[in-house]
Image 1 (cartoon, rainbow, N blue to C red):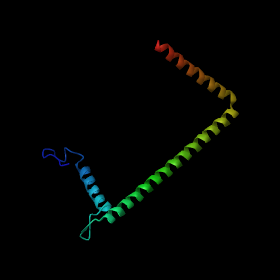
Image 2 (tube, rainbow, N blue to C red):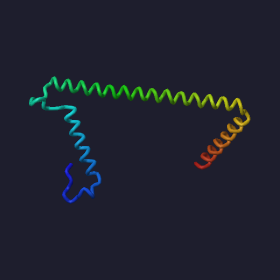
Image 3 (tube, helix red, strand yellow):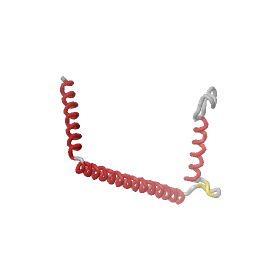
Length: 121
């Protein structure tokens, strides 16, 4: 998008970023789909080859994303299992403290519920 004449590059702090992005996209266009191979126009075979290459790149990116999500899910599950095991161990070691915490949480939850019910009226 061309800049209006009255806006200088000092007034538009994104001018250099826009120029860099435009240059990057132009370089990617030539990398992705060259239209001139030694002076000849791109053929249907060239287009099919390029689409196939892009499909492989997209497929690889999706597979990498799925693997990353699966790894994060496994790590989350292991962290949750570790937290549950730690809680069980702590409850066995300090049962009265655990009962006090549960009692306090119940009183707090009951107080919040009672406050919400009386507030609505």
